[in-house]
Image (cartoon, rainbow, N blue to C red; front, side):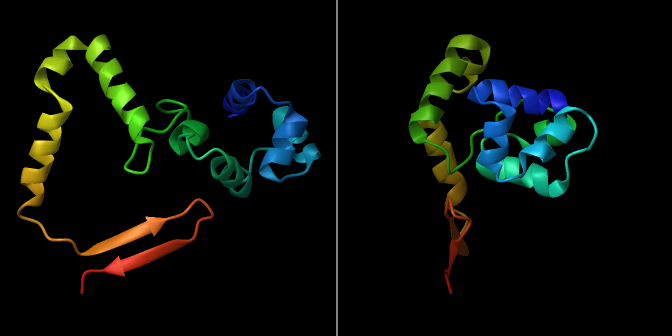
Length: 135
């Protein structure tokens, strides 16, 4: 995990001291983890994920997958469009399977026709939320 924390530091161009300040822990705690003296606690890991929510928890904890979490419903639409265009350029075979964004939207709408809305949950960056039921 030390190597993955180093990648976070390098990717954000910050020192271990700044990293400690960013996640709200003692600088000595980061020093002890970086030296291998201590292992990161769950609280320490959660603070990293709270500060950088785009980092994949699976990657940080177990080293599986990519550093950045996959795009989700709450990510920037422009980023999703760029990723779609990039995927078409990088993987033309896959692009031919998915002819256009409009086709994808149309297929999604057809799937929704047989379903009804039950609940909507809005999640905010300060970890508060609002919940609305269709009742």
